[in-house]
Amino acid sequence: MQQLRYGAYDFAKKVFDEIRDFSRDPVIGISRQGYGPIEQKVHDYLKERAKELDLEVKIDRAGNLFLTLPGLDRTLPCYMTGSHADSVPQGGHYDGLAGVVAGLTTLYWLRQTKTQPKRDVTLVVFRMEESSWFGKAYVGSLAMTGQLVPEDLALKHRNKDQTLAEAMTEAGFDTNEILRKDCSIDLKRIAAFTELHIEQGPTLDSKKKERVGIVTGIRGNFRHKECRCIGVTAHSGAVNKEFRHDAVMAMGNLLYRMDKHWDEWLARGEDLVFTMGVFKTSSSSAIAIIPGEVSFSIDIRSLSRDTLNRFHALLEAECAVIAADRGVRFEFDRLLICEEANVDPDLSQHLVNAASKAEIPVLQIPSGAGHDSAVLGNLGVPVTMIFVANQDGSHNPHEKMKLEDFMLGTEVLFTSIVTYDDLNA
Ligand SMILES: [Zn+2]
Image 1 (spheres, rainbow, N blue to C red):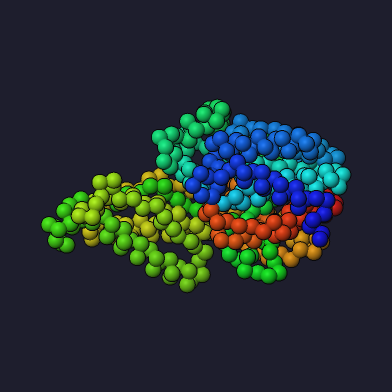
Image 2 (image 1 turned 90 degrees about the vertical axis):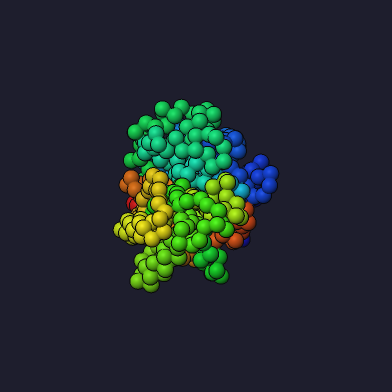
């Protein structure tokens, strides 16, 4: 088969297997915390492979790794590809890593075929893309582009008494350097950035023919890590309904209202997804106690910034109504914003052409999840993404991806790199 050419399939399989071996969570799935020892191990492993492939290795101040196959004309800006090597806690093996391995496999493939492209081809491996450990997404790419602020580094680990700054220091990085406001690389030196990623929804996997997607846009998100609803803790038997300020009931009411709004907004054609996923009552809560406090997270995503602004405002307004009705109050923590991003239409079209050249059917789809490429896209780098079909969802230990599908996506990437300068000529 075409995608088995030059041993690229076997190479990719070996890399996935070897990295899986040291990434297993002791309980279930894969755990590679950003700035943790396993993520570092992946970076060390990739540096070894880079040596075998005779690639140039660079590491920036935030620990992002750059592996470059030099092009014929080194004055030209590079074609960059890559993704992140970290995972969510007890997550799957392919979120992020697929893009890293696709880049490495492409470089391997170029070496095997003795192809030297006109311009440098660089694989970037970003640090800490996942927000699940410290509540902040795209830490590596934001650090690379000088966009982190001290509040980000003060965020606490999900279940350890450690700040992000402390984790970075422990991993051997200088946080003063990480907080610098300039870019660690010259963004003008990136002609094109293509990130391959597993699709984190079910669309491609439901298709027989198109197992690969070319992304049309990336949803932005508004998030709160930990907000609180505060009522009054009391005896569950002794306090009648009219005297209660039950925080859980208030949250139930809030969820019910927002779910209804969400339906209405979808019905009128807005792009919107809404999740409140982390709920905690206080540690002293018990069956016989009216809950006086609930903490909760918020995650709102859309391709449209206007939709995000309006839905967030609506949420605050509903909280105010419920607060007045039920004698509770809401406290919001800092709003974390990830900007939505447009993909570069020319680069996207180039990928569509590359796919057709490789005779790989593709589907054009939006990206629901955010990605490092959005960070670069928002700073004017021409970005696009390749999605690969994936089974059983993502951000869970059951994530599956067929290597055959992965190789189709990788072949689109490979073809887009080797034809990039033909097309621009
Ligand atoms: Zn990812």
